[in-house]
Image 1: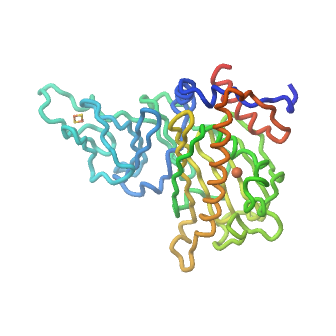
Image 2: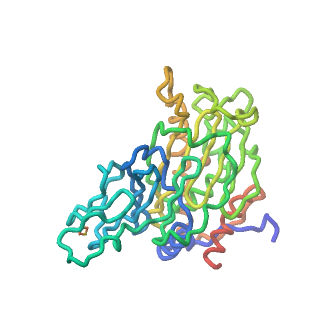
Amino acid sequence: MGPAMRSTLPRRFYADPDFYRAELERFYFDRWICAGRADQIPNAGDYFTRTIGDESVIVSRDASGSARAFFNVCRHRGTRICEAADGHFAGRIQCPYHAWTYDLDGTLLAAPHMPPDFCRDDYPLKRAGCTVWEGHVFVFLRPSPSDLPDLPDLPDFSPYAMADLRLGRRIVYDVHANWKLIVLNYNECLHCPLIHPALNRLHHYLGADNAEPTADYCGGAMGFNPGVETMSVDGKRRRPFLPGLNGAQRQQVVYYSIYPNLLLSLHPDYLLTHTLWPRAHDRTEIVCEWHFHRDVIGAAGFQIDDVVEFWDTTNREDWRISELSQLGIQSRAYEPGPYSMREALLWSFDEIVRRSAGS
Ligand code: FES
Ligand code: FE
């Protein structure tokens, strides 16, 4: 089949609640997913929680300094232990129901009124897989972390030293569109002239230099238009270059989708991330964060409004058109449409989705 004949996915991939639930199993419970950033939990006992489907996971730092992930499920009668989105455990994790108490490494320390032969060692918190890549915490929501696959090989972004970046701003969006429509929209700039008048002034919508897509990611670089220094409201760069970037990296933005849920946008002076949290077949919570080098955050004259405002506007433009895509695809009149020759990355993602669905 020639590229011009490649078609978008059938309606059920976006509009069927049962298909959505099965897809969550394949894409979110059978893969490493990006939960957040290691700098959200700098100290032992710091934690944040994430929910996906019926699952909730606690990501915390133990006394040895390692990031760990636990299913948010008490081993007594199953109660969800932590309700807060983030916080700090004062040395112990305690269930609010009957005070079963766990160490930061998940070991059960105290369980009141149990019989004398009760063995606490048999009831640690269930661990999920947890690993850190370039400052990003990935979790694998399988309650037997000993048989997990390795984190896939990801592109070499080492010049950006993402582990040295720190959160500057977070905005959470509630978008009424299937999570895959967010990925597809991110993977192309053909819509930029019509949807993003401000962004379209900063780089050319056909200017992407894409890497060969893999089963785990796709993406590429886009060079700036003449006179543009970064993606900001006016194209000016108000922060130093990230240390370690070469000449080419100082003149481009690098966009990558790491499947299933991390969108990485690497700029000469900051990192933008989106993590996607499917909530329904037609709804996705999107956590958007702006990260800056740890040495410039808080320095005299440090400012971020120029890039926050720029991407917040661009985000809202993307979410709106993604919601309109969702609405159209839900119509009984929808049928898969032909991709253009400039939409190869989208088709490569669809193929991964299609294969995993066995269709
Ligand atoms: Fe957690 Fe009882 S359910 S202590
Ligand atoms: Fe866009």
